[in-house]
Length: 149
Image 1 (cartoon, rainbow, N blue to C red):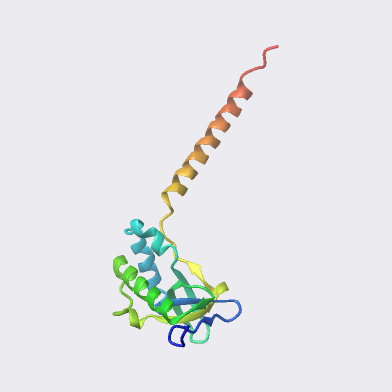
Image 2: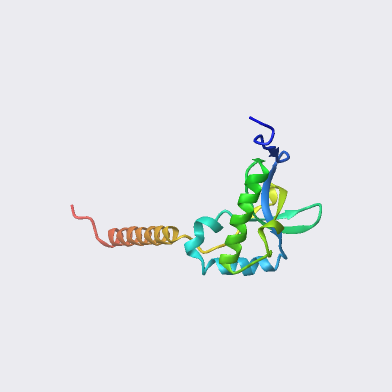
């Protein structure tokens, strides 16, 4: 393998995660989260987005987590995907994928965006509630019916 083919792999510091993202005003996160309700068809893409704090600069970052080890190609590739996703969501935070940057943020400072609950979760909760109501009705009926003996 030549030196041109060997790409430099960089690692995240201990306890950190590498993101590709953009600086965002904390108040604008509400707008991004609101756009998710109109983009449930893009759920597999936006479910990975996270928000984190960059403590040194005091900035809020919206980004796409990569891994602990990345190359410049993986950063470029994820930048293009994130840029496209932000445009599809109607929240173009940057004018070009080249404006997205790499951030090493502490895992403890990251949180997922608050989007709509998956339909499966809603149906599951409804089924659980119906099962509880049925069990309660059966228990009440058993108390009212005297034992025959």
